[in-house]
Image 1 (cartoon, rainbow, N blue to C red):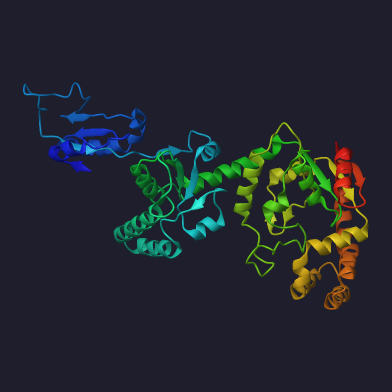
Image 2 (tube, rainbow, N blue to C red):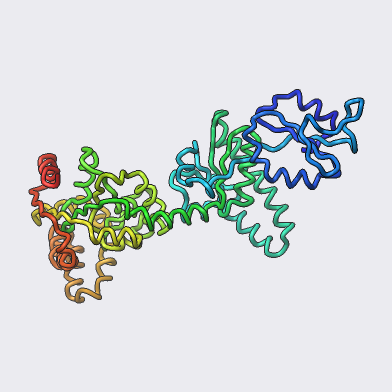
Length: 439
C-alpha cells in the first residue's frame, strides 16, 4: 500500500510485527518496485527499516539528505509498509527436508491435478476448482487481461473461503509450505495472503514440476543405497503377512510395494475392498503417485540396515517399478517360503472375499487368459465359479496357472536363491521360527 505521510503516521502506531517499512520518492518508484521483488532478502531483519532514494542514489535512514529543518530534500516522499515476503525453497536447499520442516504442505492446484499426483501428506486447498481452472484457461487463450481479471476474483474468493475454514485454528507460529503447478500465480497468491496474516510461509520454487523432477532423480539414486533381501514364494504362501509380522516385531525394515501400489501383484490382485469402491478396476494410484509414495517410503528407511521386500515382477497391476529399483531387486538374495497347498487354498479364499461376492467379475477376468490357456480350460474354471466350488476353483487356478508361471519365473533367479523355509501355517509359532531361520 502506498500511503501519504499523514496516513502513514497513523498506521505506524499500530502493531508492526515483523514488517519492514520503506520510503521512496515518486521519481524512483520504478526502482522501488524492482527492489520489492527481492524483499525476501530483507525479511530476516525482523525490525522496522526505512530506506529511501533521492536523485537515483540509495540512502539508509541516517544519511538520507535533509534540509536544515530536518525535512528530506527533493520531492515529498511516499511511504510504504512492505509486504512480508514468503520464503522460496527448493533451488538451493533439500526439497524433501523443506517438506519435513513444514507444519503443513498445501497444494493449491485444482482437485483433478491433485488426484493425479501430489506431495504425500499434503492437503488440497485449491484456489481454482476444476471448472474454474478450465474457464480461466479458455478465457486466457482468447484474452489474457480478461482471464487474469476473472481469475483474480475467483482466486481471492476461494482463498477467503479457506481462511474462514481451514485456517481458523492455526496458531501464530504456524509455518506452511505452499505449491502449485510451476510456482506461479496460484501459489504466490495463497502464500502472499498467508504471509500478510503473519505466518511464516515457504513457497516451493518451481512448484509441482520441481517436485516431480526431484522424485525422478531420487528414484534413480535411492535404490542403489540399500541392501535388499527378497522374500519369494508361490501364490498364497503369506509373504505379505510374514513381512508385516517381521516389521511389527522390529525384526527388519520392510518396503511394502504391494501396499504402495494398492494391488496384490497378480491377475486377481486388485484391491477393490476400499470403502465406496464397487468395481475391481481403477483402484490403483497413478504411476506418478505411486512413485511419490515410493520415494517417501525409501526416504524413511535406514540405508545401513537391510530392507526386505516381496519378490515381485517388474509390474504390480498396471504400475511399473522404477528401473533402478527393479535392477537392484534382480541381483538381491532371495529367501523362499513354502506352505502346504490346502493351507494356501484356505488363505486365498479368506483374503479375496471380493471375487467370491462378485463371481461375474471373476469370470470376466479369467476369460482374459485366452493367450495362455485354452478355451476348454477357461470354461472349466468358469463352470466351477458358477457352482460356487471355491476350493476347487482356487486349487485349479493355483496348479494350472499361478504355480507354473511362478516356477518358470523363479528358474531365472536360481543364482540369487539363498534358502527355503517350509512352514506348516502362518501363526505366531511359525512366524517366530521363520524369523530365526532368516536371521
